[in-house]
Image (cartoon, rainbow, N blue to C red; front, side, top):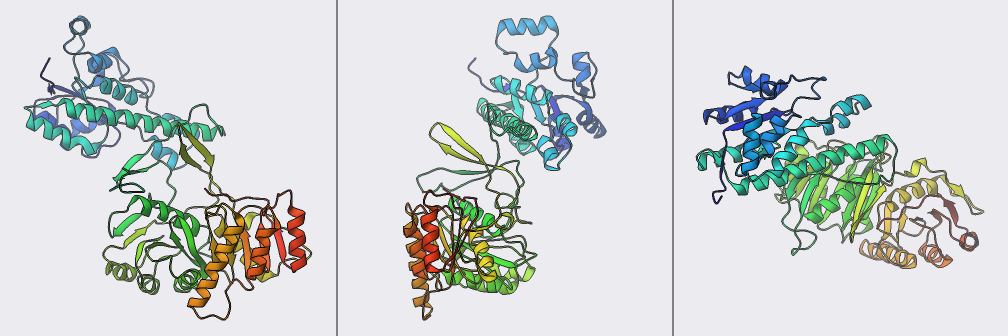
Length: 530
């Protein structure tokens, strides 16, 4: 058959999300399309004064078992799966009294929303749709003849096609809708399987799937020659995926990646305890600080490295106020992300038209469990989120001298930051602010040297008599394999060190610290980040 358009004479509609349902059903009925429906959807259509046939009339069986069984029937699936120009299929339809279904409109039981509200096990199970996915997959398989719609956003596209093609759909539309339908059921099943694995505490299920809903197609990926898109997963963790963008240009791939890094780092700082600011460039913090208010925190973070923040990402842990907005907008900034913002702050940021302002509504919980995934050639690496928090760790003093109270406070601060810096990581901190950050080096010694050099540059620019690393503390994301890295930090002026420990040369490192009068604590927890 050369004509690939298919006239829509009968539509089966069964939706949990009734957005736009009546308008869509009314438009179909106006074109003479017979409406078949189920349960609450049928009631809603009938209540609107439209003629609708209950699916039980079609199948000859009533809805049963609390609605679990209503569409799993040959008169439904035969109507969806029959190939119209196949003589054998046509004969079977005639013999068994099966009427063709040309359009299937189904959106699924709200399983993702159910688990999001922490419903009980039984309620979650009841919100697993069975008949819906079965019909969607059947219609999508037979897309040569049947159109399938899985969300209200596509209602208008179908109506436009019917208007343009004398009540028929084109093969191009049906194929596009079929592809989307399979992606939707895949994402739905992924949510179910991941929930089950979590409930049963299975860390490594035999099959693992992830699914998401398109947020936006991006202009390009990490580089201009790469394509990219941004998807939202069922995980409702506050951050760039859940935030409202109030203004500014469309977020880029790198903006999204860097903003996520900044907001995950700022979440380490409890807003009830302190104001805090994180400045990120290329997914690494270049300045982090606590302060009496957001302006104080920002200025201290900026002082760590006055060059890198240009074109960077700013994250704050409290409602963005007008004073902070004025200071932050003094230089070129790509993104500001905060839990909220005052109207005055929003107005100040609005003067920078291209600056993106994101309001996430809340901070993510750094202690919350979750999964992260990374692609490798031919596979996925999946792990639990690094949810170890500095305040929860048992610190063991391993040197003769224990850290002072002030040093201990700064050590915990530095280790919070080190968790969010690419390995190998060295972070110098003083007075609850970073004063030198060495990130992403193959050698820990080089990270220590780079961080010290950055501090020296900052001191020269600020016309300070000596670098802020003098009298600072140091955090290392992993153990010192040799004493050389530690010696670099001591030479830079560090007086106390926090590190995981666990090297076969720990005694050598501890001895070097003791000889220099430096205090050292072990955390027993490593914070590699790659």
